[in-house]
Length: 490
Ligand code: BGC
Image (cartoon, rainbow, N blue to C red):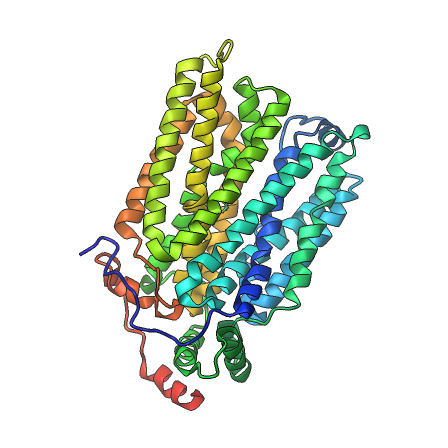
């Protein structure tokens, strides 16, 4: 048997078309990624602008701020109780308010308060957008449509880097206000866009809106007879209602596979080391002897590579599957990390002093870095959001996604904090550390992740059942209580 379990192209073949309505809804919802990307991209640049540091952190001149409060319990409750749409709107609105406060910040308190709102905004968006996308997408295109979220993240990073490049040059030291305040734009795009969205059928069913749910399903599938799919959604929703306390239930044995991936996928995504490049590309390039302007340019180049390579995953994920991309991306990142380690070790040694760097050396490092980023951008980047959003059953979906978001944020923060200390102590060994992590996570995926391509989201129980390891955790959920209630609904 394949280690990924039986390839699980489901027996289901729900009727429906690939409608403009679903594409529009996905594009709008995915724009939620812009706020996350913008925030990731802007912070590194702004906290290296001297006027900003002088105003707010005169004592910790070189230290970074990164206040990302953990709001994930809240966003999960809101998503479950009020629906994905309202949660997304909250996300956009809070982010926009935070941006305005930061743009006008007159003191540290305003700055921190603004960042708290940004943190909440991102938490709400990341909690609801990936699951909204996975819920409304026709299952055969779920991978591609969900990955538009990652596409937006990369566009957000790119725009933020471009903006920083120009605002850093503004005379009078007020450029940082434009960079921070500019976050209002992606916040409003997302917030206003959400007005035109309807909630997902799954989320409407969760709140007992049966007619609305069926109507929405008809509209996004572009056909009248959606009975087969609706029946499965309703069944999942009834099963979900039997669960009173998702936060407690998620700890039970039957959800062990989902809980494992909810925690490990975002953790491993961060242990690829990608954010070292997102946050510190200019610093890294500078410390390798590239000039100041070249450092900023490098940040732009790496963000362009990041965006372009994401398109590759959009084009291939529903054809070749999640496992293939995870494993190929892992291999690509590993090779590049090895090349970077050898090149840097050969020039810097452990003393950290390279002398005059030859052009060929710089070229090797830049190319290896770009190929590494491309490897991340078509694998762990988008899949780190896609896979969790499609494997959680409805009853624990909101809670589990909150765990994924929280783990992602905590480790994004941790890597940002410890990176400079790690670089100083480990030197080129830093890349060895990440390379070892990439090997470990690739083995984990190879052995334990079942393929989820082509499986309807509410049929996902099948993949665990067919997996050689996870099958022992599976419990048959078709209780007569659920079946009985269903008869009344359909
Ligand atoms: C990750 C971020 C990362 C970004 C880079 C996202 O999927 O969650 O931590 O900075 O990809 O494109």
